[in-house]
Image (tube, rainbow, N blue to C red; front, side, top):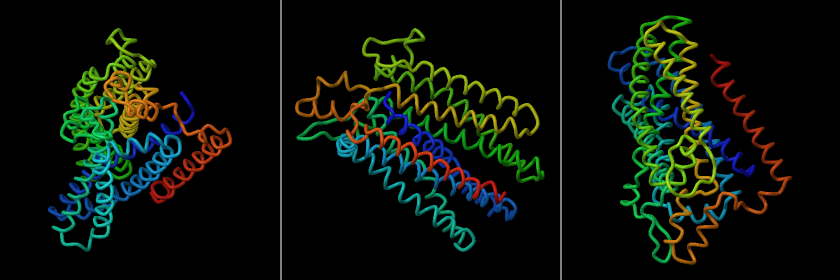
Length: 382
């Protein structure tokens, strides 16, 4: 693979893990705050506010890495962005609008914590949670389209028919898998935080949060064991992607195969096994911070490997079904899309060795800054 792909993968990987954790926390925090208000439990209120502080830091990291990902795409693949931006305007619009409203909800929820009436603060919390789910809704529509271009119409220029795009065979399992994976990961993260607090100072609130989040993680893991195979089977509509992942295991379809990604799928399966092992130990044992941290870490890397598997299993194309659907696309769009949707068709400037070195240095500085930010905001104060 060309080096530009690795740069994009690195920043996207950090972004997507932070985003998944954010989806869960933006759901859990309003629920904890609501319970604290109803029971007038100031200690629980303090815990919820502390978790919100963590979420704000995670959202900042997700935003920075998401911006870096966008800048890399614009710099390396200007032709792809120009074409894809027009074709997928509707789903991108849903995601961008949701991001803006979500940021507004974060501001309102934070500054209204002790100053808004309870109904108003709860309303901003509901808005926070809803937009956390509509952001990935838009992006998963784009990812499903890149699996197989359901809804692609060409009437003078390419565009997406929204209703046909929603019927994309890979959209529903991909979106649901993302949501339940995020909730599972976030629940394990909260259980690890609670286990850490319990190890330092046992409290009824921390114990309740720990047991509840662990139960949610168990349910989420079980659901993921259903959604994962469902998404894998939906990839039958994308033969090249299916073959790249599964042909080495003896499951293949007729069609194109470009790169063997079975090794990454195997790593993901091992991580899932580690996660299940840790959760089972936690279910039938005492509170254990190390096991909780292991379950959380394996869940994070499961999400990461899953996203990389989804990205790279269609290499070298942005659109996995491009070789199959190319003959159905009229000229000149067949040539235009064939060039724009080819991952190795990077901007000529992006291949300059000096610029690649500067890019690598910039990423190193960015990662160092994020590490320092995490230390200052989450570790040093604690």
